[in-house]
Length: 85
Image (cartoon, rainbow, N blue to C red):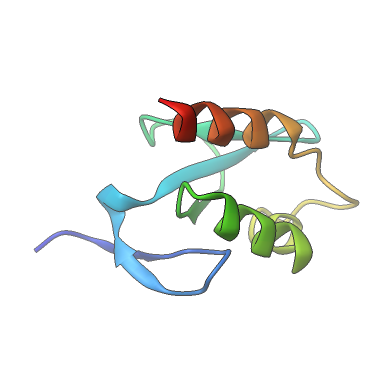
């Protein structure tokens, strides 16, 4: 049985293989494609709607235990690239 994780955008449970792990690097949120980077991670459906929900709900800061507003532009660019390909 495949592990199940919760998307921080829509709060739905999904198999780990269908979600994208994100991690905090300094004050930036980055995609962890291989799910092997060290540190606390959070899981997100790789869709614009889940990303926007997570930003609106300020879920990145809470899930990754970051102080202040994290910079999500790198992650947003990566998701846009994934959607285009």
